[in-house]
Length: 427
Image (cartoon, rainbow, N blue to C red; front, top):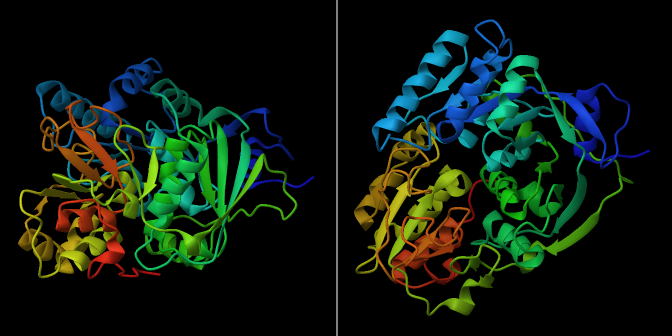
């Protein structure tokens, strides 16, 4: 019998020869993550096991990224509790400003190909970019992992997505994910695993692959997995990850569905306000004005995203009245962007740069609140009404290149229509 990637990983971690979609298995977990917005419940549950009841704690990271910096005393006190827990149990701690959970975990070398990683965030699917079964769980699940090192899973069906041909300059993984959302709809892949493959995936840099896996959460997917190649292995090795155990799907694996996308024919896409799956070509909505631009988040706050912004804004100014905020996904990315001179280009153009974290994306810090009737274009992953603190504002979603091209013109703009917008990026 032949199997998909997720089936092979779950079988190996469960000590079972084969598994099939719908099976319930108890599988070993290789690493776990708790971020500050979900820490209170997780820590409360873990206290029930006592001081000696958490043998897996050293394989867990506590990440202070959502309340970063803490906007009120309750958040600051939650951070104190997380720091104390890390000290007491030997857990790994990423403090305020270190970065977003989905960026610092791979940067820290905490997992490798073939692993299972769980986290208290739906976008834990991001880890699938590294041939990892990454998925979101609740705090009670994390407590069970800390006590036993295991967790139960229902084996998901898999949708195979083949991206034929190569993305054109100025078109990014974000445009692929928006195309998928437009085709399947939000939650159109509920509790299924996505397997991305094809020439376009092989040509992508790691930053773009992480975007591809991250957005699986908006499709409702349990996980999104890519096969490992030399880029994957080199990236992980450079960050001290463990010995990889690459997992490939069998050629005759059984899939719930197969989707073929001609990547070479894709154009920059945007999601219209309030619905992530209301997708249109950027060209088709080019008369839509914008007031605020956001580059960042766990989806598109990586170095290549900031490079896209700098390629477009070099020597230019934002459109009159447009405000732009850039939030790197991690401190390491912040420093790399500084060393490359990218922030000098962006701030000279009129943008503001925030410390690494999630606060701007979910309006926890209150640093990006739109006024009534204002329009935000963002590289984030969600745009439901009120996401940025004001239900009377609109949020549109696009790639970093589309966001910045729009900030330059003051209206939704295909990045290929402005100088620098066809920057090809890292391979």
